[in-house]
Length: 146
Image (cartoon, rainbow, N blue to C red):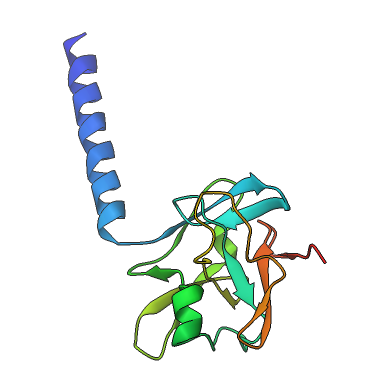
């Protein structure tokens, strides 16, 4: 019995250390949730993530006022997938200021300033800053409500 109790303590310590090491990497978590337009990928707070059709490949074109209304999803480490999000579709791209922006299926990701609560999709299909904005499904496909 005593050996089992010691093993449990050691196992708990290992779990704590692994969790701390993962948190120390600074990787942004990308998850998903049901929204009024379907299942959408989200940030860790449940806010819908969007792609911008004006972006070219993994290169972001959203800077200045655009980035005020459509904040890029930044990370300081390797992004982490949660739930139905596919880790193989997550990546990063370097912005002009050197910060890392999270990508999904090669698209730089953004939140929308007007989405005040988790699960809102006010930016879906909007055409601000010269192109359309679309939420992404966990498959990486756009959720086109138009």
